[in-house]
Amino acid sequence: MVITWDITIPELTKDETRKAYLYLPESYALDETTRYPVLYMFDGHNVFFDSHATYGKSWGMKEYMDQTETPLIIAAVECNHSPNNGRLEEYSPFNFKDSVFGFVKGRGRTTMEWMVRSFKKEIDTHFRTLPGREYTFIAGSSMGGLMSLYAVLEYNHIFSRAAALSPSISLVPDKIERFINQSKPDPDTVIYMDYGSEEMDTHQGMPQCFSRVTSLLINKPVMLESRVIPGGTHCEASWENQIPFFMNTLFYEL
Image 1 (cartoon, rainbow, N blue to C red):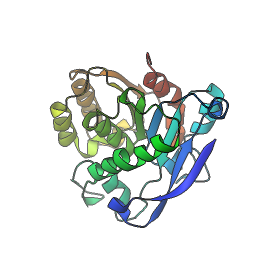
Image 2 (spheres, helix red, strand yellow):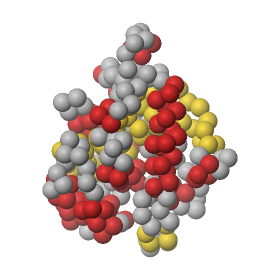
Image 3 (cartoon, rainbow, N blue to C red):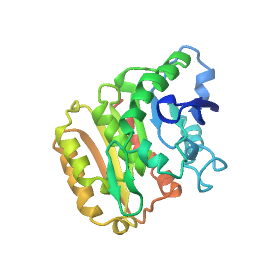
Image 4 (cartoon, one colour):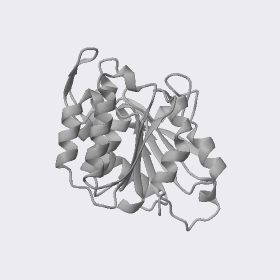
């Protein structure tokens, strides 16, 4: 079951509404004593329903979760659709300048402060979650993948595991590498990171950037699964195909 409701994020867009999405496993209604881990996801409008997705194709998370009977709650929020780099600003932890987007003022910290202080608190209050770090995960793709890497390292006391699919690390290569170098994650931190083989040539220096980031993560050290997806592209259909892989990693020895 997926519940949707309208929310506001005053810190980011004042009284403008956007949708929140919450997936509850079918077992949730059958046993009122069981509590569940929670996976927080970016770009919530692309996670469950094709009719809500930006390009008409979602990740299909509901179908996967129902079919596998995975005991997990998924909480996701729609992104900022402003044409003035709204999504880029909210999903970037760093300021950066790009030939296509111009100057982007990163508001990723503000986004995460809202998520951990307001949204997570609301989810933990109203639903049967396991609120501790061990059972709190985060995932996203593209800019959401960049944010997932940032979140699991900067907010490591909140999130123990992350999945970063096709993360936009090539937009901020020096900054993300410096950030990882300075981070101090607990050694039980688990990270899944992938990139499609068909994406590698679309961003200059992406293979080298991906290699450096994975090496830095391994040396922290964290438990890392890193994959280059044969034929993988930068779209929801490709990310849907990776669900079994990153879900297996998120639940590793849990």
